[in-house]
Length: 112
Image (cartoon, rainbow, N blue to C red; front, top):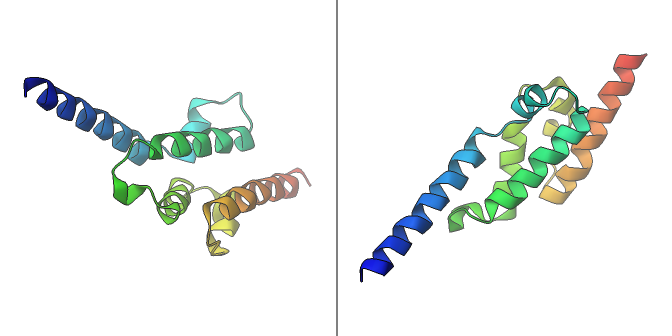
């Protein structure tokens, strides 16, 4: 019985760790923490982190729309992502296509 209780708390502790990482990760923070990387590389890091972290969360976070919505929230405050946020992309994979394109377009505009 003691082992089952320990296992339950260990699983719950791990789930809370994943949830904290899920809630605290943003694209802006990742860009600031990795000044030597391109914004597109930082975006890919964030997307990968969310894909991985989502697997350790409670059931209500395991839906694709949760992942899509969370990525949109994590990208708030970055001008480069604003176009993608208004497109109303229905899937996470669609968002993974639109966001890099929006960032790339903004970088091209800035270079001109």
